[in-house]
Image (cartoon, rainbow, N blue to C red):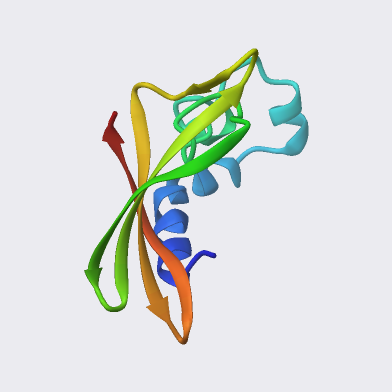
Length: 114
């Protein structure tokens, strides 16, 4: 599950979009052109946490590295199930997972080249 630190970082990352979107009305947004707000709010058209526009069917843990008794680095690999399972070939999400109050929480995420 996700730590408060992770949520704070995500709020900061999306703060420019939140500030911009608060300046337009719902009707203005709904009547806008496709991708009109892409520069101000790429989050509308691209799933940052997946680094894609399309969803994946699943995820597997590829590698786990112990940093300390209370911190792990976990590398994941995303896949789609078509005729056979196809893994993402360009990037992989890498999570830092830390023990907080007795629970393991995702504290940060970055993308590494596959």
